[in-house]
Length: 412
Ligand SMILES: Cc1cc2nc3c(=O)[nH]c(=O)nc-3n(C[C@H](O)[C@H](O)[C@H](O)COP(=O)(O)OP(=O)(O)OC[C@H]3O[C@@H](n4cnc5c(N)ncnc54)[C@H](O)[C@@H]3O)c2cc1C
Image (cartoon, rainbow, N blue to C red):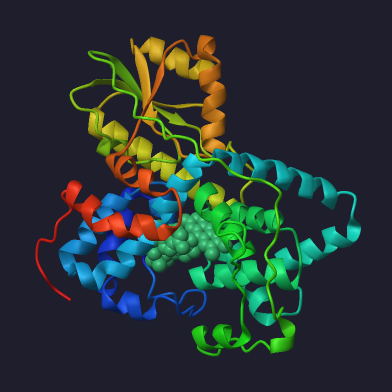
């Protein structure tokens, strides 16, 4: 595992180096071994790049293009598909934003219940401490809190045990993950929890099985069958979600002087397609102010990654860079540098988008339009994230062709 999870100050440079170091494993080795959870500090068959990709210190497009320079399309197929799972979740949530609003609402209801139901509060606290007496679950809870990372298989087992064995509210589990994961992501996290619970693919649940845990942890853990639920009845919700159309990218205003508004959702502004637009300055949207209070290591990651985006922006454009925390500060910064518009990337549904919607709602305070530009990767993939993953997966070769991400040489 090579990404930011392996330590060090988060930066684009470190993410690129992490990708380069993981490259030899990204082909057939990944396909064969990616499901093994070998324990904290031993995750060598997965990349650990998710915090970097989630915050776009490196982009999905760069990751896939780099992997295809080292491996044949068939050898890299599994890795590329996994990268596209993130795209699928984001594209799907973008078209079903009500799922997010309902999650936020239901989470608040569940939190309120914690303050009146002592027994539930004690059970949740024990689960988060890793103190329920199921060794694997307890170890994963501690690994998550200490490192900010869990292997994908462990996330599936953990969520399943939380929901079906412990019978705790899934929203509280999703929130526990979100607060502690360095890659905590509204779409991947919320929808993966919903998928385990049988709410995403209606009626299809994920059941953690003792022998599967034992096999894929190489017998580090050997839970007894009696420790775990033996069936997983899908959770129910009395709601139907209607798909809403995707928004088009806002065209960049002609001959504008732009302030780039950099958020934690896309920290590589030097790769934004700005054409010949003039950049007047770069405003960094203060990280860690959105959503629930994150853990210390998540806050440190976000602050470090944002500082890196600021340093890169200063070097790239040689223009003023400032942190802004309110619409009024953005307005002042724009006015001080004679900017006529602000631009950011299309924000995925989640806490950050909600915050920016408030800012845009207060146009008087901002005093200038904020354009949302869409990355081509999202523009081409998101329309296929309407049903199950399979539909998007089928489109991967064609979209990669459109993006001109082609095989340059054959290796593995
Ligand atoms: C209950 C649950 C909650 C999750 N919460 C999050 C979350 O908050 N944020 C998050 O980024 N991922 C989440 N995932 C997805 C997945 O577990 C992580 O993306 C993956 O484990 C990251 O580790 P890695 O970088 O070593 O992955 P690798 O195996 O090296 O995969 C390469 C890249 O592909 C993407 N990827 C791989 N698997 C998935 C997947 N199942 N879904 C989406 N993207 C994937 C990631 O960008 C990852 O960096 C969750 C999964 C489950 C089951």
